[in-house]
Structure formats: C-alpha cells, structure tokens
Length: 173
Length: 253
Image (cartoon, rainbow over all chains, first blue to last red; front, side, top):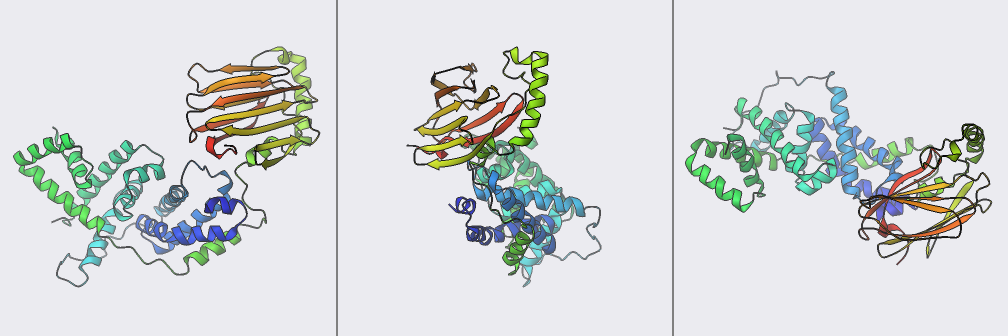
C-alpha cells in the first residue's frame, strides 16, 4: 500500500499518490473555486497538509476519501477568503444556449458553472462530488464524514437551490 | 404526498436510488400531476447538464508544483511517523521535563492525600515515565523502557487482542490503560501483582490499572478483526495517548 510505503520512508510512493489524485482533485477544486489559480493553490495545500499529517492517517479510511476531504476543505477555505475580494461579475454577457452551435457544450458548461457560483460553496461542493466527479453516495459520505442519509438530504437541498437559480435565469428551458 | 416529498422522490428517481414502493407511489403522482411531470423534466435537464460537464485540463506543471510546495514545507529531513508512533510517544524520552512536573505533582498530590483516593481519574500526579523505544517483531509490538521499568506487548489472535503490560516504576505511579470499542469483552486478566479493572456495562469501555512492580496480561475480544478499538493510556491526569487502531493492524495471527 502506497501510504504505508510513504510512512516507511519511500518518498516516491507519495509522488505516485500525487500523480494519481491531482487530476480528480484539481477538477473538483476548480469547480468549487472557479479559478485555475485557486484550484492549484488548493491542491498544493491539500497535498502538503496530507503529507504533514500522514503520520496520523487513520487506516480505517481510504486515502482517496481522506485527500478528497482535505482538498474540498482547502477549496472551501479559499472560497471563503476570496468572498470579500471578488464578487461574481454579472456584467459579463451570458452566452445563449444554442444546441446547434459548435460551442454548445462549452456554453452549457459555462452556464452550469455560473449557476453553481450563485449557490453556497458547501452546496456547490456536494453537487460537484455527485455529478461532476460522479462519486457515489457512500463515497461522498466517506469524504464529507457524514451519514449517507445526510448526503441525500444535503444533495436534495443543494440541487433544489441550483434548480431555482437556473430556472430564474431561464437556463433550464 | 407533499410537493417536497414528490420532489425528493423525483431526484431519487433520477439518481436511480428510489425504492420500488416509492417508485409506485411516485408514478401514481406523476400520472395525476402535470406540474410534477414538468418539474421532473426540469430536474432531468439539470442533471444532464451537470453530468455532461467535461473535465478541465489539469496544468501539466501541477505535480511538479506540488512537489515544490512539499519541498518548501519540509525543512525537516525526517519522514512521516509510522502508525505506531503513539506507542513510542508513550515511552517518549521527554522524561526530564516530565520528571520535573511529576516531582512537583507528586509532592502536591501526597500533600493533599490525593493518592489515597481510589478514583481512576482523580490523581493529579504528572507523568513520570521514562519509556522510550518501540520495536515490532514477528509476534507483536514490544516496547521497553530505558531502565526496564515497563514493557508493553500488543499482539492478537483473530479478533482478540492480547495486551501484556509489565510495570515497575520507581515513582510508584500506576498506569491506566483504557480500551474503548464496541461490544468489547474482557476475556481474562492475569496479574502477578496489583492490577484492577473497570468494565463498562455495555462493553464499550474497559479500564485496566496496573500498579508498579507487577505484570498483567489481558485478552480483550473486539467485535471483529476489522473492528476499531480506541486505546487511551494515562498516568494520573496526564494522557499519554488517545488513539484508535484497527484490530487487524496489530501483528499476530
């Protein structure tokens, strides 16, 4: 097991973990922060924190869920810090959805991202884990450290808020 | 069903996590409720939009920049601690500081007559341990103090942990070992000296107090090999460890 190899002093084992998880974590962080720079910062911090706390890693959990949780928390922290610094710029023109257009998929993704940025960061995180990262309820429960039932309940509330935003913007029609 | 209940089930339908009996109820509601059908269509659209969001390309430099961040955060040369570090901490060589505290605490404790109180949690005497070193061998995890005043061996057979503790401390302070878990069973306790136990009524807590100059061996059965057991060791009010381990991580058969 790679974590045990790290604990035994094999630094290259940690490099393998970084290679394996940096992509998925970066994508989740990007969807939460909506900033490539912030996503990189979040992932760097997550891996550094994980490394420093590896000695206390609880082997009853999977590294996957542990590092995910750290990365999500780093992303949420960054969003919290940025909240006062940057407000979503509503003056940016919203692209119209045109299924026939060449960039339709990218435009739809942009609409989704804009709507996601209008709901709370915690809601955004759980939606990102479920839909954009495609994780199961048990996996999300493990990452967030909450019961599966709570995951369902929080996901329901988050998606309803997102639906409300998208409907009000006319992006679901 | 309320509208909210219906919406909850609609999302479960989309997630394909809906129970069969709920599906029947929901289908009946959908047949009779055009608005619910419209909401379902809206939810499906949203789910499809979310699910179709593609991955963003990961900066090629990300792993390298993580490596740099790690290097910058790591002026130390030591590696992360092994999982059994907490056991070493039990025997940490910071004994000089602890000795000073313990001497002061001992004097105060004797003065107040606290040592005479038989309550496991009342002693104010600080830790006087001189323990250090931890060594894993094929049979278990063995620890020894510098002067041989205490040893602790952890091993297991199946879901049963065998914990052997020998204490011969010059300060005469007892070591309390608290074992926490789910449906723990103290199978036996053998001692050639002073050792006492408290067992919680629901099997969630076992406390063993081992007096110096005695040896105790106890067998504690956990709920299973994958069960998690908490171990908390203390001398007086000084907590030396507070950690959970999984039974099957302890060396043994």
